[in-house]
Amino acid sequence: MSSTGLLLNAQNDHVVINNGVVEITWTNPGGIIKGIKYKGIDNLLEEKNKDLNGGFWDLNWSEPSSTKTRGKFDTIQGTDLQVIVENEEQIELSFTRMWSPEVQGEQAPLYIDRRFVVFRDVPGFYSYAIFEHTKDMPAFHLNTTRIAFMLNKEKFHYMVITDDRQRFMPSAEDRLPGRGEPLAYPEAVLLVDPIEPEFKGEVDDKYQYSLENKDNQVHGWISFDPPVGFWQITPSNEFRTGGPFKQDLTSHVNPTTLAIFLTSHYAGTELLVKFETGEEWKKVLGPVFTYFNSISDKDMALSLWDDAKRQMNEEVQSWPYNFPTSEEFPNCDQRGVVRGQLLVQDRYLSKENLPGKAASVGLAAPGDAGSWQRENKGYQFWTMTDEDGCFVIKNIRAGSYNLYGVVPGFIGDYKYEVVITLTEGCDIELGEIVYEPPRDGPTLWEIGIPDRSAAEFYIPNPNPKYVNKLYLNQDKFRQYGLWERYAELYPENDLVYTVGVSDYQKDWFFAQVNREIGDKAYQSTTWQIKFKIDNVDQGGSYTLRVALAASNHAELQVWINDPTADPPLLSTGEIGGDNAIARHAIHGIYWLFTVTIPGSLLLGGENTLFLTQAKTANAFQGIMYDYIRLEGPSCQNGNL
Image 1: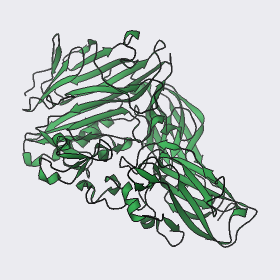
Image 2 (image 1 turned 90 degrees about the horizontal axis):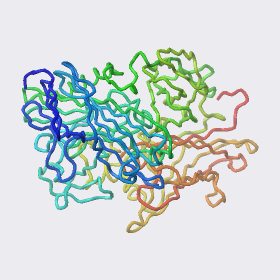
Image 3 (image 1 turned 135 degrees about the horizontal axis):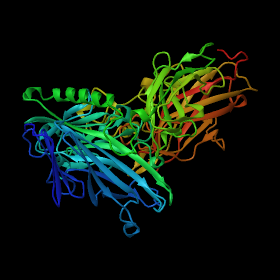
Image 4 (image 1 turned 120 degrees about the vertical axis):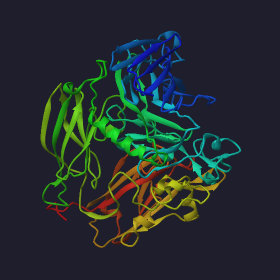
């Protein structure tokens, strides 16, 4: 459509904005997007689904007594519409929903203000929301909130997540009984009789398309007739929870595109936002940008992805936006900067401090080292250090924070012990800050790479029956059913790893899971690490460091030489609920355990370390190791 300026047409049951490029229709006062007209397509959104259609904000919530990560689904319906801005260049709509005791048990106790911003001649729109829990509201758990778009099923068949993760996708109908065979959980379906034969024998599972927050900036779909792209762009992670490595959904079959703000995916109940009665809380979620593009040549339709990335970079450079009218969203002048240089001190590696290069450094709510993984009510601001460990964190909201850091190649979490208080326009120079990773003695042996991921370990080929063709030559861990391959490789005896002989890339299975011994019956597994010590210091203490990349309702127990000893050297109790094993991830929540081994328990010559995953309720209980290291007694001069 040709440019006709910016027009607003509000009726009793709907409101329409035409900006000269795109026409968007919302319900009034509900705020559900029912139509997006663009480049010859009457509606980019689906209207004929049985349940969910169009575009909408939603949330999932539970009563405070709940121990689950799922509860009541709520497609947020506004009760009042206000036009906040209306001029020749910009329109901002506000769809609000109040809360009162009359709806207790039916609606999440939140005041919700959803905003939509449309500019003249811009092919897309911005959306953000202010969620508020006030002192007169009861306790509850906020499990998830997001924006979801159900795209036109007749037009959008090609999905793009990254440069390497893009493909034609099966249809929603392919997942239905008769065409699809349900697998171990509802999200995973084996396509046995798809409409398009090319998909036969593949597994479709939305979790195969997850991304880490730091990488989850743009994704979406392409229509080839006409060649049109539909993209979700998230220019900042400040309002997401769980830090830069937290993973979440992107786009998936239906076709569906999501902007995720808060979820417990790949983390478990620890990332549920739990409110006490009368607790006061307010947070701005977004803005995010929903972007549309097109091209005249159908043969060039895939180039729409390159344009979407270009637009994403423009949005990132424009952050923080200057257009939101809510006083809850501070502009650039109201924000601060923190800068410094992160160094690493490990005297067993170097006499000099080492630069903390390629480290993730961030500000989050004050807490213990590593608490940012589980923090879920505030804002977080992260960046990466350069080769010298230098960093600049920009556009930080005023408030009090701890500075946290994660350095590749070193275990543990850094925390700057002084709480940093930022005020409007401040620029804080921390200078050199030093991380001393946990270390008691020289490394006797190690398995893996301390990078919070199990990607370096042995990842088997998938069962040929359960293949996603996209991952045949990349990211093998995203294939369905890999947990079942362990029992096939080790049908009776468990994994044994010999230090100095075995290769962790070939001999260390990426996940310690249960062995199936019958129909939904499982057996715990015990792995062994065999190693030699020629000269044992019987009076000294040795230190075992065990870093986990993920844990799902598992219990790790550790013994040295005698697996019948009571108690074991370590018993973690049940830990974790990140479900990373089932959801095709190579990490979830990070854990680090330190085990002291008296020299009197070690033998001169060969020793055996026993690692047991003791819980046996289901196939997905288990752990992924990140890194294991045995340290000898400390050297007098602190060097190897």
